[in-house]
Amino acid sequence: SVPAAILSALSASARGGVLFKGGAALETLASVSTFAFDKTGTLTTGRQELTGIHSDGDETELLARLAGLEAHSEHPVADAIRRAAEERQIEPVEVREAKAVPGEGMVGVDAEGMIWAGNERLARRMARHSAPMDCPAFLAALHDTPMTLVLMGRGARILGVATVEDQPRQTARAGLAALRARGVTQIAMLTGDRQAVADRVGSELGIAPEAIHAGLRPEDKVALVADFASRDRVAFIGDGVNDAAALARADVGIAMGAAGSEVALQAADVALLSEDLRRLAAAHRLAQRAARIIR
Ligand code: ADP
Ligand code: MG
Image (cartoon, rainbow, N blue to C red; front, top):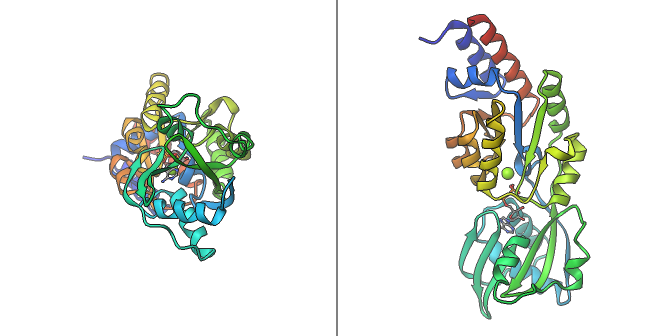
């Protein structure tokens, strides 16, 4: 049977919006000293906004094509593109056979043939038959921009780039500070996004530069969590489909419950129903108190 101290910590925690799937996860959380966070949708709101379009051609046409492709995606980046087209009353072009490339972007077929949209890794994949990869001046100029780049192309040719960004959650900085105040020494960021974006968000939140890991594929997130777990008890906090494996690998997987994906919730041991990241430190405190009582 579950000790009374654990039961009461579980219910106190649930009242604060932190739902444990069982007493074991609460007991494990008590000994966690590394907290690894996904960025987009976890430390940030996940509500991306389009901030610019860069190309040698017609921007309206580019956005129409991009919106046509992203119409088939549920990624937060896609949502920003679709909203931007809508606001500008741009009709998306018809795109068939659209498919997601996880952690990279989308591919599909329009009236003129195959098109793609996504990050630089996808661009390199699409350009694999033609080395060196096409890098127009408008793309080179964006290299240090601390925003997510959505490259759009046809084969090896890059037609244009949209920039999108979202902001840290209001409670993110305070949430991480509260964990540190509890003696948590290792706080890391694990993201599929670009280094420049990760560095911007990380420095706003006070995360140590060496604890910021960018450009990760879902399997790279798992490998890093496993590496942390070989030294420490690790909690991973994430929201996306791409976080599911890392959530499962962590000693305690914590899914963002309000806006997170179903897959992430299923893989996790804990659901954070509140968007308030300070609740993590509160749950850690409750877990440690309960652990002290039962020992
Ligand atoms: P994360 O939530 O950690 O940023 P993902 O693994 O979901 O990462 O995606 C990694 C990167 O792949 C994103 O930052 C984005 O640049 C790109 N990407 C993923 N899906 C799309 C999409 N539908 N359209 C454009 N880019 C995408
Ligand atoms: Mg995410």
